[in-house]
Amino acid sequence: MIEIALRMLSGDRTKYLGLVSGIAFATLLISQQASIFVSLMIRTANQVLDVREVDLWVMDPRVRYVDEVEALRDVDLGRIRGVDGVEWAVPFYKGTAILRTREGLINQVFLVGVDDASLVGAPHQWVKGDLSALRRPNGIVLDLQGAQFIWPGEDVPLGRSAEINDVRVELTGIADVSPTFITWPIAYMKYSDAVRLLPPQRNVLSYVVVKAASGTDPAELAARIAARTGLQALTWDAFAWRSVEYVLTRTGIPVNFGITVMLGILVGAAVTAQTFYLFVFENLRQFGALKAIGATNRQILGMVLAQAAVVGALGYGIGLGLCAIFFEVTSGSAALEGFRLVPQVVAATGGVIALILVLSCLFSVRRVFVVDPAIVFRG
Image 1: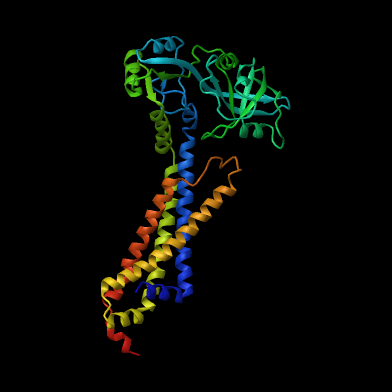
Image 2: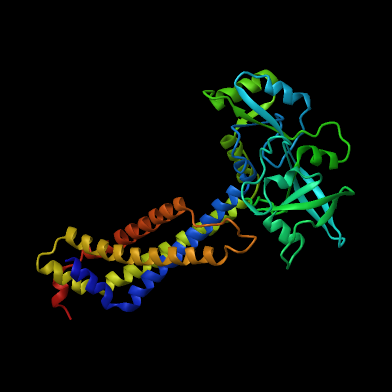
C-alpha cells in the first residue's frame, strides 16, 4: 500500500513539487528567523557569559541588566570579600567612552576594566598579542570587529595610538570576543587605567565579580552576600537571563520576530493544506478503487500519512539546508557574527512542520473516508 501511495504522489509532479516547495519555504522562514532571534538574545548576555572564571556578579540593587550600571562604593569590595564562602572578589568596570583616533575620527566604545592583578574578565581568544598586552601602561585591547570598524579596510597593526578623554592610549592587542547586543567596539584595559581615564566622579566601581570557595553553593553565597551587604548578588546564569528578559520585556523585538515566524507557519500550513487537499481530491477515483477491493479507512490514512512523511522529509531537509547555507554565507558579516542555526530551533521547527503535515492530512483525508467505492464505475 505504501508503494502505491508513493507512486500516486510522484505521478502528479506539479503538486508533488508544490508540496515540497511549500514545506521548504516554511522551514526556511521559521528556522532562519527563530535562529536569528535566539542568537540576538544571546548577544544581550555575552559580556556576562564571556567572564567564565566567576560564579557571582554583585551590583547595585537597582541594576536590571548588564548595560545598566549604577556604580558601587569602593568599600563595598572589601565588604564582599569579608563574606564567608568568598574565595576571591575583584572589581570589574563597564562603561562607555569616546575614542578619538589620530585621524580625528571619533567612536563610541564599550570600555571594560579588568582587575590589574588577576585580569579576570579579559579576553580568552587572541588575534594579535596575548594577555600581557593588558599589563602595559595605557595599553588598550580592542575586539576584532571593533578594530576593523575604527580603522576600516586595513590590517590593523599593533602600536596604533588614540585618545580617550585627552589621554593617549596604545593598541597593544586585538582579541576575538563575543559580539554584544549594541555593536559598538569593545575596549579592554586594566581597571586602574580605565578608571583613571574617566571624568572625576565619586563612585566608579561597576561590578564586583566573585568566585565561590570550594564546596560553597553559589546561590546560597549570593543570598548571604545580599543579606550582609544589602547589594544585589546574582549567579552568572541568573544575571545573563536577567539581561535577556529585560530585552524581551522592554523592546518590540520578540513581537517582530514572532510575527515573522507565525507568518511562516501560516503560509506553510495554508500552502500545504490546500495543495494536499487538491491532490487527494483529484485522486478520489484511485482511493475509491482501493476501497472497492477492500482497503480500509485505516490503510488509506496510512497511505496519506506516508505521502506526507515523504513530502515533509524532503521539504524539511531542503529548508534546513538553505538556512544553514544562509548562516554560512553571512558568517563573515559583522552584523551577523555569531549567528547560527540553533539545534533547539531545528528540533522545534521539525515539530511545527510535523504538526502542519498531520493537520493537513486529517483535513484532506476526510473526503476519502466518505467516498463511495462505486465512484470507480461512474463516468
